[in-house]
Length: 101
Length: 486
Image 1 (cartoon, chains in turn red, yellow):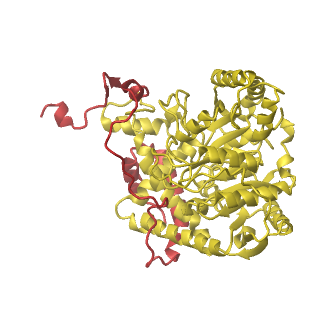
Image 2 (cartoon, rainbow over the protein chains, first blue to last red):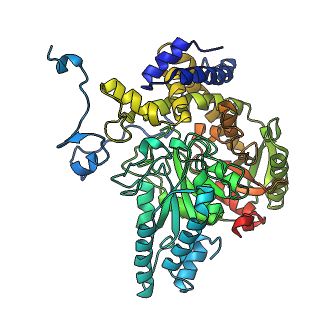
Image 3 (cartoon, chains in turn orange, brown):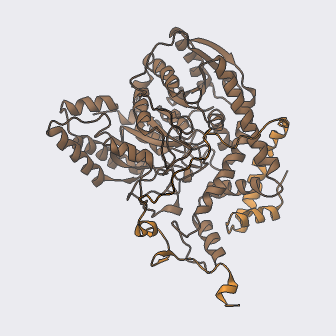
């Protein structure tokens, strides 16, 4: 069962990976092989089985809403590729804001 | 000073046979001698190590008592963050990342006076079983430098094997502590999920990741396990049970212990030396007074499929944080937000990292979620139940840790599926969240170590450690060291 290259492109976009043409082709092949192996899961009847989504057995832990010591602003920004004053700096998300339209 | 255990060092220090500084220099000199060839350490923290060593030496000089782990030089896998010490996760994405805080497990070891020698190599973001996916080159197996040390904690296991530290801390998501320990002839302990905090582990799969020790002996693993374990307010998946002194409670008495040998241990795909050494271990357990039966767990063979859906799914979510905003690499070739994210990730993420992100996003995407992620989560329930049912009648299950001994560098590198199948005995344990240990149980004809895996009930690491300890003390494997490093 070979993955359609358009699906691979779509997944790459969801993954925020600007893959090259040769990477897309390589992953198409490799992912198809892995998914073919994984298709064996269809053999198991799981119609009456609940999924396991919590493996720790612990449930919602809460604490009092009190301020505790945390990172300083300098520490929080120390690995940021671009920062200014107290903020991380990123490009505009919406072009309409940037162009004032 | 060769191949010393924690208690040996501790008593030597108290008796002033050598100082902590001398011991630290012993390891640092060996690292200088062997690290270029074996590529075990990514970062050696020489001055930090000597500073901490001097602090402990001063205490000893002043006749003050020192704790058991105080002054013991150790290494930490580079997916575990260390304050102010560069942490790369074995990836070019974090080539210059300096964590502003310590992980809980490192913090607990530092509180005991650990001497940090440095950060060890691993597959990038811990994705792999050979260390060949590291952005900084593979590490080599101290038993044979043409072979892989295993992965993803390959650097940690090789460091202990090559006597470049007394013990190391790794992480295990599908076998990444146990399998390199098996390939390098060490003890590798995976704790029950939630026993030790994941706070400060660079996250791979959040419902699978567990930090744990790689050591020369079972007793050493028990000592480190007690230190790093316990409830942590920063990790809501840790549980409140008190932490026993695992080392003090070790016993060699296996009378009445019921051991299930996994029937699938001797199936197709398991190499002869692995089968033979695991078979031979059965008679050791019998002599120790245990009752042994062979038991089949047929659902385990779906473990790889379930694992390689669930884990890449969790990976794809965890890897989203690398978007060139708060940390990590930023491309020079990006104007828009989309380019900034997509180009930065494309330019530096290693191939296996990209592959797992892709696999995960596919399995989670609309139209595929039910068939893949949800189905795998149900198989997770089936595998967990099968283990739990078996462990009602038996105290532990034993199997090989890996179907093969250490394979050649480059042998499986271009075959992702072949690499994934290396996890066949280890990953079901993470699926179920159980504790398990790998201990050496012999060698192949080419003198490569074989690892035996012992799996226990949830939260019963003491039983796992006891069975391992009894076996270890009745066999010579923990006294064998790689020739190059004698």
